[in-house]
Length: 346
Image (cartoon, rainbow, N blue to C red):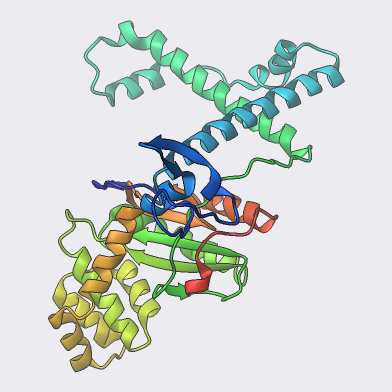
């Protein structure tokens, strides 16, 4: 994931009250939750989220991830103990039967030497041989154990009841592709020059195809300062959008990965855009403020790099796999609470 410096965090809720520290409430009751008193003025949770709308989201999301990890591990332990009871053995004996017994034989000394020679090792082979073997065994056992846990999970009906925190992501003026009434909205904050964004694009294409009619997709520009061509490429896509071909241009940028200004103009010709109108738009910087506004929005959401994703308001970042992304989409389709993405502003 491409990193960059930002100062604020994710937006969690949008509230509006008469004034900081003044009486006022909202449907959630946050206006009555007093966090602190300053010289007699009672400052509420609603006050905090109005002045710093993203101030608590990162903390809530970190807690959720830790909580979910603990619950997942607890489920694995429960399934393991239950299966041991069914087979009338101890947990240790169960793992020996289904995991350790499937462990492959150690590689030959010759294979280990080939592996060693490919490393920038300082110590001689004889000094690290046993460490290599132990590390290899541990990795293999971890994979076998994961596979066994997955097999136990596949035989059980598991419904996770934890509620993930969700950010409010504005969609006003955003480019959106897919069914307008799709139950899942994926918003990507990305940079056309970011190699990780380029790498994940085929995964996103597959996701859109597999969940057609169920998933809508929005793209937001976060041109990073260390990518000199990203800002102009983003502007070019919006210039194409003026002529009704935003997504065609977006797709072409990720396909060709050619981002020089001359290439941007060539892309316009390839899509049979009005060349003079496109060049006037691009040369004048007509769309620059729109791109900068989306960058500022990304900063206000506390994004730590590109690509970053909000799936019905749930935040994910980095080069995620198709399996990871599709699992989240499936979770949403199974009935997570209504999304908090600001669809009213579409």
